Length: 345
Image (cartoon, rainbow, N blue to C red; front, side):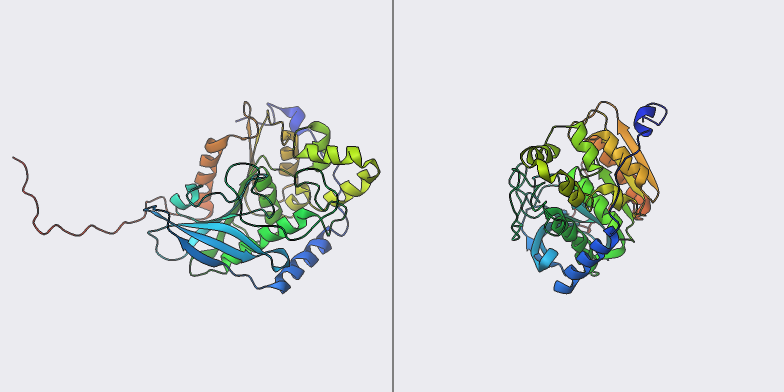
C-alpha cells in the first residue's frame, strides 16, 4: 500500500475549497422539509428471482418532496432476527440494475439496499426506475448541471436528500434490520453520495468510499476534461458569466464539507491513474474527514480504485465494525430418507 512517504506531493496538497456560512442551515432546512412531507417508510414487494439463498424485494420509499424512490433490498434467506445493513449508491448514469445484480453484501450476511439516483439509469449497466419530476433550466447533456442556477433547484439537493431518506426508510424496518448497525457504500458518484450521507447522518457505523465524485469540485474541473466534470467545463464555456454563481451553488454539495462533519469510521480508496475523479480530490476529502479513516491508493489502477480487491478489504473491516458473524448461516437440515442406503461394500 502506498503511504504518504511514497507520494508526498499528493499528501501535501490542501484544497482551497471554502464552504458557505449557511451550509448547515441549508441542509437542516432541506431535510426538515423532506421529513415533513412523508414519514420514513419502506414498501417491499417480493421478487421471484430463482435464487436459492438470497431474497430480493422491490423497494420504494419517499425521498425529496415525498417523491417515490426505487431500489432493491436483498437479504440472506436463512436469517434469524434483524440484520446489520448496507445502503449502497451507484455510479454516475447507472441505476439499480436487475434484481440478481450486486449480490455481494447479501451473501456476506447483510441487508443490502441499493438505491436509484433519480433521473439516472439510462446511460450504462442496469437501468433505473426513479424519474425526477422536478424540471430545470438550460443544462449541459448529462446530470451534473441540471438546476445548477441555484442551490435550491440543483439536482444533487434532491439526490442527497433521497439518500438520507433511504437510510431513514431502511432503519424504519426494525423487523428486518438493526438500525444501530448500518453503513453506507458506493463507488464514484455513489462514493460522493455515501460521503454526503455520512456527513448528514451522525450515527452511522461505517462508510466505504471508492474514488468519490463531487469532492473538491473546482479543483477537479482544473485537473480533468473527462466527463462528468467535463460537463461543468462545457456548461461554463457557453455561459461564461455564470462561473461565480455555478461554483457558489456547487459549494453546498462538495464532499469536503460533508467530510468535515462525518464521524463514522471510513475507508477511502483511489487509483493514481484515475482520469475521471483525480486522486488528489479523494485525498482532499480524506484530509477533511473528521472521523477515523484509512486511505488506500492503488498505484496502477484508474477509476476502479482497486475494484473487487478494495471491496474485499472493506468486507473484512465491516465484519468488525458491524459485528457480523464470520460463520455461514445455518441451513435447515434435510429430511431424513425413509430407507437409508446401505453402505457400499
